[in-house]
Length: 324
Image (cartoon, rainbow, N blue to C red):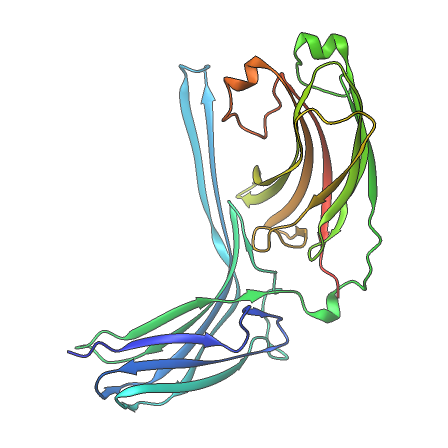
């Protein structure tokens, strides 16, 4: 029985392509013996997959859990099947079959090529699949590989993009959630600025200064969130989830000392801000100051999206863009 294998290799090691570019690579078939096939096909598929899962509780903690789950029909972006080799025989050993495919042809009525993005409710993915058809008695050989799509250069903003700096200050009076009594009475003040128009290939930058604090500081973090909205029927369901946390300071920082803010954006978990009809993808950053408290030690695994008695938070909306 043949133990043949097939592998896909793309010409670019980083697998990043633009819609106007040619997707080039090779299909590598390895087999200890020759075998007949009914053609070698290449499939290219790109789509926006949407789903929503919401849990709500009625009647308090002992109430009824209501779940709302919806899978929205995927939005197709590209769907191609190309025969790269007609039926025939694959020789024993290693067979290399090169291919070259245009992702987007002139005149094709495709959906906009959104950038690759892996989220919680929204997933934008592009896959290339190679199939060696071997008939009914033998299982066909198949290999699938994800490639990354970025916006065409002609649609990108010219560099450099002037960063829009948002000036912020954090005090006990700017907080909308309850605080520990010692924080409320003693007070604190943190000032700073941070970029809100951000290039995806560059870090979010800024600075902050702890001017005063009656309670020692435990740490200062920047939480990066995604805000995904999906149109389900006549309702828009919005979900906010944490992408990553970047620590700016550890321990009780010196007063009146400027601390740099430097947040690197993760590649597949972020994309240019999108406002489309059936969905939207937005981002925001929260500067979180954690004060020393015995209570915080009892809730080490608390939800970072929920402000606590021992934290002070300032949230800024972000617009992410890609530049040339």
